Length: 525
Image (cartoon, rainbow, N blue to C red; front, side):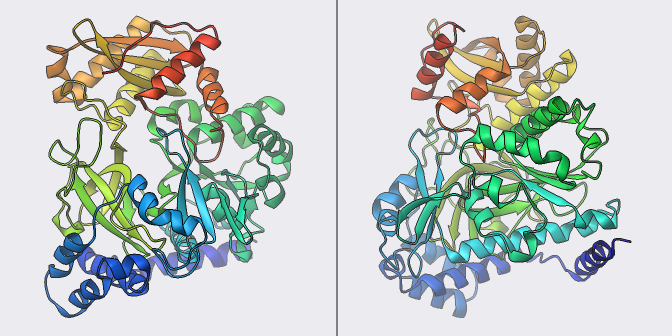
């Protein structure tokens, strides 16, 4: 009898049954911002930008006057601006810059488009915020009736960066945010956490993989969490090593996969070939800057924003009025609070957090699938879309077109990317598709092009005019992994960029030439 499991599941059900959804999202967010302002008002940043006055307005005045003052006093920041003006001082060890005290941890993040590392502060308050939201995500499993009681005693396999963090100076460290979080897991969770502290410290991704494969028979895994591509690689290696038909032959209790970082849909077909039975999939939105949202109920329309745990959100309509064609935010963009948004509209996210990010452009675009429940889906990145001539092609469009095309052709696409190119006097799209299955490139091109014409009205218009052609190059999936390895982006939360722009296309083409995979050189707009 799994006594602990029954107690846990009973507690989860009780917790879920007494929890009430807080549907006055604006009120919750007002309180969240007030707490952030109160905590940071005596920092250098807070004193410069009149946090005391904004806070007094939020506490004593009715309506949204506080938000108008917040927009008036506090400028919008991208990473370059806030690091140049503020975060560099915190990284050098200065206290009370954007958040009280000295920042102990910095998350290294380059996203999927920048070559140089970014240094994102992770304060003690943010570490606690990550933990609280992670616990809420576990509690939400009480809504899944089909999960057996003893599942809660099984292992949690969480694939992330190394917990062997690099030292900045005495007592301060930097590394992948997943490594920072794993290094600070609650003591009560340690017995369930896999791959365990020793393997988690390993910095070399290849050695970490081998150690995980070696230990796999000794674990009883019920939950997995991580970027889909890396979990798929791990399962493939385990199946190959132990000559299994599927992963459930070694982990019969595996039931839940919490995925994040990228859309799961393009990976689903290949992923499910490795399973002996279906899993429950839970979508997660966890970034270096904070744990933003997670799917908190079965069959949800999207992920529920975490509105009361140290993050205040603003929403910038993702259109030509607020962004340049290169995805740069214009000065003084239109910004909205959560009660002002509409369903089905693309927004870029600004966040203010308990790590000292203030009106910070995180770089992701989202849309509300269910405004009443504050449920969102990620639609892409502000700089990861194509609009050479007005086609406004989003990552969401790309994911769906590849998913449908792969399904119709009976192939598994493990990675893909696309670049906008000049074609004679006009434009074209160059796709690179990673698959180990036999496929005719022309047939794949026609499928992708056809689906995009259905998915995106602007795309079909431009295909008749300025967007004159579509090219597809099919490559072995290992090509994509090799390029990631060369750039030092293996494992953890690293993802292959969906759109290649500027210098990345040159790096990519140079790598293909090195591998003897010569393709036609293209010129970006």
